[in-house]
Amino acid sequence: MNKFLILILILVLNIGCSPNKSELPESSKISVKFRVLDENISPNNRNCSDKSVPYLKLENNDCSFSIGNYEFDIEKKYLIDNNGNLKEFWTYLSEGPLTYSVDELNQDMKFKKYENLEKFNVRISKNRTEIIDAKDTLKIEQIFKNEKLILIERTENNGRRILFAYN
Image 1 (cartoon, helix red, strand yellow):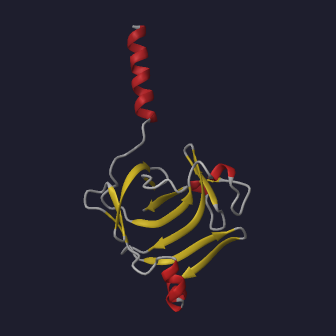
Image 2 (cartoon, one colour):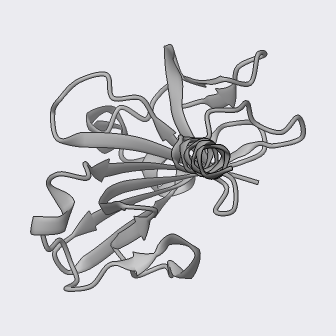
């Protein structure tokens, strides 16, 4: 009997601790792209605040959030319309975020080119296990279903990560 309980406990812990790598719900659309400092750099960095807030309590001027065992400092935030196009671009500085509308970006083509926003388009792949970001196909590492947040697999070790919010 004790072996049976131990086996059940191990099974429950294994299932509960494994990342949720299922596909995205059929009706979901990407609404925000975050470029963040990774989970190794962020806890020791202070971008524009001393505190990190839980993702579900994130407000417009917050620049650091936590989700699960991760903490991320936001560098850039891209608000996305239902067609996957850019609505607003936010860049986070020590004073807080600076925001730019699409109209403002279109008036400054040098800035738009510098930020690589010229061919911006984001969508979910047909198999719903990847994100198509312009010409890049990004594999989903983990989905946080309660927060509706997607962590993308690391492609380079440059101290940055990409996350997407969906609705």
